[in-house]
Image (tube, rainbow, N blue to C red; front, side, top):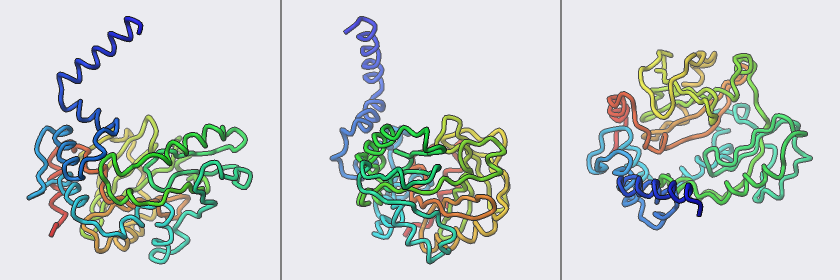
Length: 312
């Protein structure tokens, strides 16, 4: 090993040794904690991330209650709702098939994808992950099909449940689905790389916060938070607020009513929607927003959102 590489390794080891929390986070990323029971794992990861003990006995904050729900609210329907393929059949009767992005194809193996049957622009994604293996094809003639298949194969092996013990993902039968590439004229005019996403956080069946994302899953992603009256809220989490806040959707009232319908009966449910050229489309559900591990700035919002969830 070259001297410079050896020194780099030694510095990394010293950094880990000086911070036990880094060791735990590294062990998790290396899948060395996979055998741990969910509660033990979550307590350890919480301690590593936040430096405090996880309060499951009397959870008060939003993030604490996300961990409680992971462990104790285990409705088998959640697995269907987290499945990006199966959820379409669940949602269609509730809000109308016209609000569900159609499926162009479904495969169990990336090698079986018939690219010749797909349109010039399309999306490929796995049904059991959150962005891993996502292929956005804007020009089929320029698509590196070999690379796309390799990325999908890698994503198909990923057990998304193990990362933060979001159990609904654990038993999803893994598939690849193809959808039309959806583009909004207004978003394109603003120079956005991807569709704006409206993620409506619903508490006890009531929409309370709209998380709006620009340039989702890109290097310049930004997130803003609004109340149902479209008042910008003064907090942030993983990403910076946008320099130009998302434009109020034309069908905001319908979005909120759709979210209210879909979240009825759940302590917490995030309903993700698109507005594409004036039409409303369902994206996906999330039961544990940011897995309950994204700090709030300022922290008081963590407690405010937590107060809206009424656990048994």
